[in-house]
Length: 398
Image (cartoon, rainbow, N blue to C red):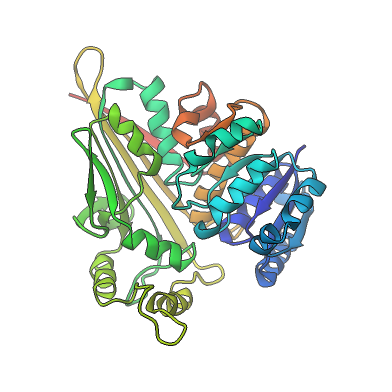
């Protein structure tokens, strides 16, 4: 049993905390939001009554403003007094890099799903100097798709002969609600960042930059129907694999019509953070409105879908396509959203790898390098399977 600190009590952070507590770890959940902390406590109390969750350990909740504690010097004292074996960071992206840096300085191993915009490799040497293992981007995408590519590149049927990689991924409500037909499992500002940040692809081993929301296409999915896929900047650290894989891209999935509506808002200035009315920017106002519009209601059913396709050839020069399909739905028993499950449980799987020393490289590492480490990908798949999250792998040969 380890003592683990989880920073962020949002939908994903709370799922991570409860999953780790179910694994009989001692969990400390840290967040400034009183309501979020209370919701976790209520859910914990409800699950504790169910025989399926009889081994659920008590979660200690600490309410503190992380930014304030870092700025006034209280953070170092707090985290050292907790004597943590590992930290999982599930805070919003704008806070992620600063928190990661301070965790590394404290000398604590960390798994991060905050998806911050800064380059995590800036902290690589700092992590080495502090004897820290830090794995970033440990969600579903980025995260699970990186693990898949790392595994296939190192151990798969094509290995270094992979010529293309494509990831289509998205989380959607089961019941559409006009006009957006979308609910955000994360902060609206993080979703808007995805809709405004230029998308980087790899084409013929060259980095190509395209506008987010562009190249919209319709794609059919079994048991779901037709969704639209559009450009988004999801490759992140996988861009570096472009030196070996000539063509790489990731697209976001939504119900048809969503991209054109968002593009209209974007073009009309609703996502601008420059022009202000008083002290409020259009972006701040838009986020405030969308927070309620996009918020998943309690026990609202939704699903997560991901398709990862790699093409190339084997050592006999035969053309091969390897596809992974994921379709996960809201868990009615634990009352956990599919996005919280697929994101959070990937993170807890990586956390177990670090705790068990299966992955113990010192420095800051993206998930694809974890996938390239023997036994790690298989461990993650087994971990997800215990949560009834299943990846279907198919191989086609010409």
